[in-house]
Every structure is written in C-alpha cells, then in structure tokens.
Length: 208
Image (cartoon, rainbow, N blue to C red):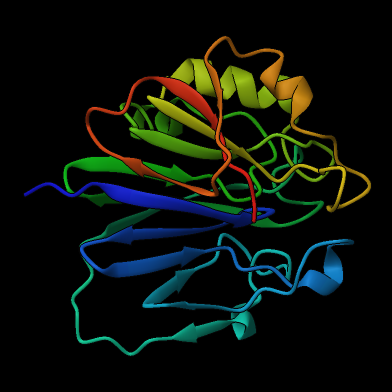
C-alpha cells in the first residue's frame, strides 16, 4: 500500500520527511544563528545536510533513533554553488533528491544560482520541491520562481525566509515569492501528506 510521504516544516530550511515509520531530517539549524527561532530538538532515523554552515548542519540538535527499520528513501545528491560566483563566495551546496513510494522530492538547500541544463533535467518530474526564496544568501523570490517554472514540480514549498517572529535579518519574507505564484495554499499545520494524488500547489507550511 502506498502511504505517501509526510513532510513537516521545522523552520528555516529544516524539514522532516516520514515514510513507512522511517524519518529523515534535512538541514537541522542552530537557533543561535537565527534570531527568534526556537531551539531545535528533534529525533530522527537519519539526517542529511546540504552544506556545512550551522544554520543547515547543526547535527547536535538531532537524536538518532537507532531504529532497525531500513530506509525507504533512495538519495541522490546534486552539487551546485551556494552563490552566484561558482562557490567562491560561500562554497558549494547539495540538492538532495529523495525517492520513496513512487514519489520524488528535492530539498534545494542553499542554492545560490540558476540550474544548469543537466541539473534541470535531473530535477524534472518532481512531486515536491523545497526551495529557498529569501535571497541574499540564496536565490531570491524571482530566481526561485524561475527555477520552479523551469522544472515544474507538482508541489512547491518555500523555505529559508524571514517571518515576523524569526529569521535572518538580511533575507526577505515569503510574500514576494507568493506574489509570483497563482496556486498558493496556506496551511495552518506544519505538515502535510504528499501522495500521487496531491494537487498542484505552492504549499506554505506554518512552523509551530
């Protein structure tokens, strides 16, 4: 039976993906780097980081469960620059493609530039894409929208933006990105279930 993937937004660029009772955490953050963000304390079966900065790679916030369950996720990493200068400013970043239950999901980490043709081809046909939209350290709203239109994921989940309560002061809010999208769905919850039947949308998840 296809159970889908539950995607939970923990704030900034941190997500928990759960499938068949197995949980995979992406880009755990150090709250000391993010004004207003609550401390992150989370349990998961595995963790992946897009790059080594502590707002994306704070693995001390994660307790690994030590489960005997095998992971349902197949993981592929695509390397790309964290900036618009080939990585010379901020280093390199990994886009993680996660496949399970016949679904393909990508977490873009701190992508800082447009995709190459080969990268766009590899990222085509996604069921969901978690992409930064706040700019300054990453692509901004217009660049993120252009990437999403190019690869056309079924569900787009914006991340790495400032809210009225928390976030990096240099980056923008989510609203400029949402103004470019015509399929915005705002969730009161921090999580939703992704299946093959999930309708096309830009999903704004609310951090608890």
